[in-house]
Length: 493
Image 1 (cartoon, rainbow, N blue to C red):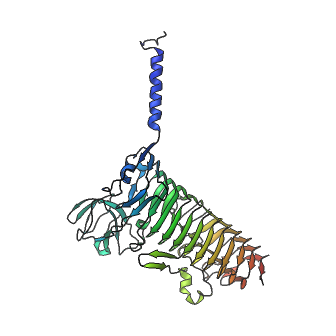
Image 2: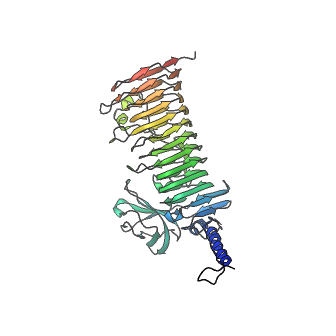
Image 3: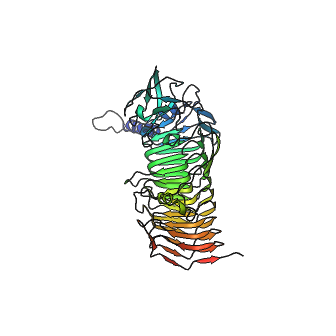
């Protein structure tokens, strides 16, 4: 038998051990699957513990069928990357606890601290999720955290405070929280489960914390076949992510925005697809673009009943919001009805949105606008290089499509039925409307700008068909150099 020089071990022995090590390494590299063991003593009923067991390794967490009443968010950080969290359909229901309470801070709390001092201990328990914020400061950053210990009025929390909170600004700690709270996570999938918020049991809250699923600063996030109901703020919030996919989800009874998409200014981050979702009964928007969304596809969604939802006190209807200049000229609001909220799909453009496609969606029963572009008062024409095509929009209180501050937007092949205006073009430039079918509108296409700071100019409106519209195409108030031709206005009778 051949022996390696200087070695007394035969070749087959070395070969055996090398292959064994290779096999062992491959086995260790296989993604691990763990199943949640329900534990009623735990704030998340054992889900957080199962997620943490895969920390740093990735794998799959399976949540069996059951009704999980949560006292705290399920926190996901960068160490929870490469993770799949999967339920067993709507039989796996994660619901936030109903016994909401409010604590007032007795002392100022500093950013980075793990402690707050409150005026009285109240009903707070170790493990409770808290939202710490300044009730008197609309622009402050709130902190979603968890109680780790209680010593009289001194409450220790983790994660740390994201901002400073001052008593003079009405700083409070409120027992309300996200179901999933993810920050800095990459390659995360949540699928096949149900999430239920506290909207019918507590007041709405204008904050990230009321979002049932919250994702910030990561990449490759997938939410699929998830049912979201009764969110006291947004249903799904995804901020500053590359590679987003929300598909085949059902979102119902959401206080503000069913799906909220936000990039960071200048980053160009927020790319992906929002496809095949069913959205109904949302207070503000079905899908909302916020701040620098680029390279998004919103396609094949069914969006209905926007501007109304069921809250703790019964049915709540959203007040329409018009652009700032329309509010200045209130006498023109009836003449030129155009609302940026509510909208089936809205917020488009503001903050520098560009290179997005909105196509083949069905949008109906909206107490505002079907698809609404938007600009902030300090911006010029922020919405650039986008396509709005093949959407079916009907039973709309306001315009079917509202181009506000748009720059180089193609609006093509949409089927619109509205009691107000089919398409509004306001303060926009280099846009093209072609091949749209507009029915039963008071005005088929309205082109205008209320102030001379931004003219509506150099737009092309061609080959559109208008049926049973009282007026076909109206151009007034600071418009110039728009090409309008080969449009057809028919009456069915």
